[in-house]
Length: 360
Image (cartoon, rainbow, N blue to C red):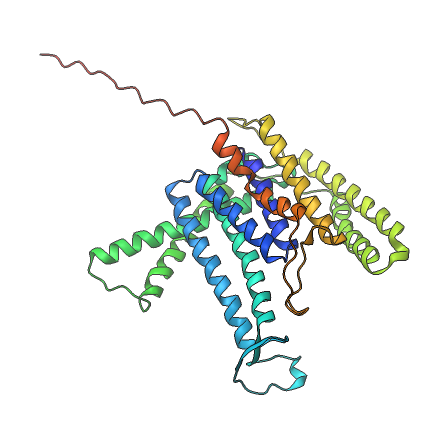
């Protein structure tokens, strides 16, 4: 799959996980991401980073449940009560302990499922696509930002590889392992990753890599003006129904400002590519499909269709299930069709063996 198709898939998973609060649909999204993770190609470092992100996601899920238990919550179905000190009201209603309800634990589990789905999607993306491919497929207007993101994507796999190497060296020397020795493992790995990133940045700066002239003041002002226009458009659309025509006009002007900035930034950066990676027709269709599904999910959330929203504090009702919402959630598994039944990549040619004649 093309890097653009993977980026579109990750964006679609993020959009669906963030707009969906129905636990049934979140479970379908999580299963779809796991199915893609099983079929997606991964390198050795990608496998390690995926495991790290999976462990981190499960830990975040558990932390969400623990925090909901410690803070206490409101609801009709009280399960147990956690003893805690009385907090003054002037602290903003902070609670430590108190009654723990099934509604609060359900809300915490819903948040944890969304976080776990997003982290697993990023783990699949990090293992299936190399950062160099992401940088090569980035538009010229976003080259500087993509360069920073690319360097950041390489930090986690390299740090995990350093951690594994340090752990093996300590095991060969007979050093004990356990939670007490965790700082002696993590600190060298993090320091090594930061030093490697600094060396890479210094080498790139010394060679003038990615250098481009600054944008004109007019272009920068136009790009900055798009943010307040978008905020004003959202505010008038959701909170001032009488100003919705103005909200639509402000949104169009903001999009025009962003398009003007995009055009100016793309003209200032000129890059040459040794190997141009074209976007095949199936991947173009996949990108359009992912963008369309994300837009449909956002529209369904705003209109209340499909049963994407669920409020456990309304008496802990049964989550709504509909075919439309289930199909939106199931759309996260479309890379499995592409990877399972799509064309297989051609195997790499075998290296030619040189014949050496030995004189008698």
